[in-house]
Image 1 (cartoon, rainbow, N blue to C red):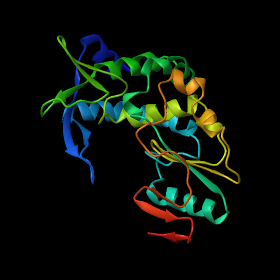
Image 2: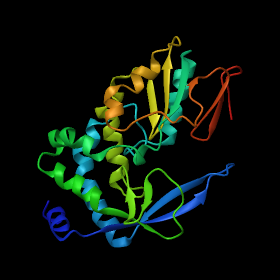
Image 3: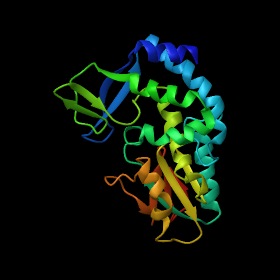
Length: 241
């Protein structure tokens, strides 16, 4: 707490270098964040404290950025659901870190972190991107006459995944039956297809927190094949490749 207070009082800027790399099999680019060594050490220390208090409140459906979980546990859960004869609804979140509204989490974080909540949110304001290459068009960063403005949580900050996943909890994702997620990639398994699945996922609470479905991705009930975490599942032949 003392360290966070000092950082806020001195208005220390925690810098995260911003790089761009091409996406595989696409003409699009992917922004990558890499904190400077001192900034990473500070952010990591704060993240460790927050994780002890917040991770236990993240639902079993989430395997991304959670200790003792990963792609393997997610894939096993997918296979189990398919063997049980469930239908699959696939979706992806729009921007995730970029669109989550930090200030929308204030009330929820105060319940878990007490007096630390306001300090944590102020740290997200002090975490700024430092461009290593020319700024590319993206939703999180906006070029203005006064410099670069940012939305959401900064890519590359150790705090961003934890707080963004906590936002999913607060929007009610933990109440959705059959949900399996790895960070912002998700699947919902049900015995029967239903038109109400999007309403369950993206309710008024999700909208308020900036959580919405990616419109440029393929979303909906899977008919034959789907790709998830690098694996392709063939529903017609029960093949995995």
